[in-house]
Amino acid sequence: MSEKPASANSNSALRGDYAQAGRDYSVPQDWDAYTPQMHDRWRRLYARQSELAELYASPEFLDGLHRLDCSYGVPRFEYANSVLGKATGWQLVAVPGFIPDEVFFDHLAHRRFPVTRWIREEHEMDYLVEPDMFHDFFGHVPMLLNPHIADFLELYGKAGERAIAMNALPMLARIYWYTIEFGLIATPKGLKAFGAGIVSSAGELVHSITAPDVLRLPFDPVRIMNTAYRIDDFQPNYFVLDSLEQLLTELVALDFGPIYETWRDKEPIPAGTLLQGETPWRGKLAEKAL
Ligand code: HBI
Ligand code: FE
Image (tube, rainbow, N blue to C red; front, top):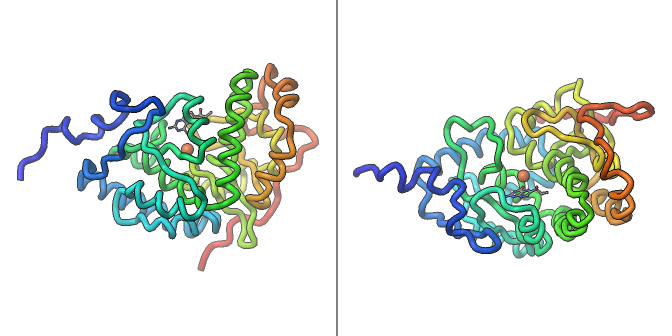
């Protein structure tokens, strides 16, 4: 059997190809276009990460992951959509990569989650800057099966327009960053991760849960909106929820308008700073599974 020309099925043909994207940036997933190498790469990423997740990810994440049944190769979004549709009404839309803020928010506001259709290359197995399908699907989709996260993300999407209009998008984006991407949660079995940026990263999943010297703070939405973050290294601080319900109860109670007006023109707190008078979260760290 002869190899196809490199350009026909290479990742770069899929990666960042916005030409065929619709106005909402959606593209067909085109599952048949994935090569055996891509399926194999998915399987290896899945095997490594699911083993760590059993030890360090939250029960809600693990429950969602098991229900998606996607260990065998690049998942079909169509199948995930049937599982999601029944559970929370969310649907996945395939996208070529990063999409404009207002388009991203509009999808979330309508319970559609954009999932990048291409998978990282061999030299990026441990780290890449932009989200790929492994981050988007393995990291985010299991949590979309949780009713609290499902409702929270819709509200986050609906909050986007006002944040943009008020010139306060960075403040809103920090909420997403420190919960949906890098959130930790206290459980009876110790500290666990539910944020997609953590659970899709082998290094950070172990680090965020087990490192004794990492700054962990109790969840506090206004503190979060004022805390800068890093995109190029492990987070220098994390915020710990007591429950996923807390996301909804504490955020719905806030009037974002006056908060944006008060803080949007001030410098954020540098990541990793313990302010005077603050007490770090001091709960039980991970309990090693037997
Ligand atoms: N697009 N595909 C994709 N994935 C994201 O996580 C994403 C995006 N566009 C904008 C965006 N995130 C953020 O800037 C907003 O949450 C603020
Ligand atoms: Fe993400």
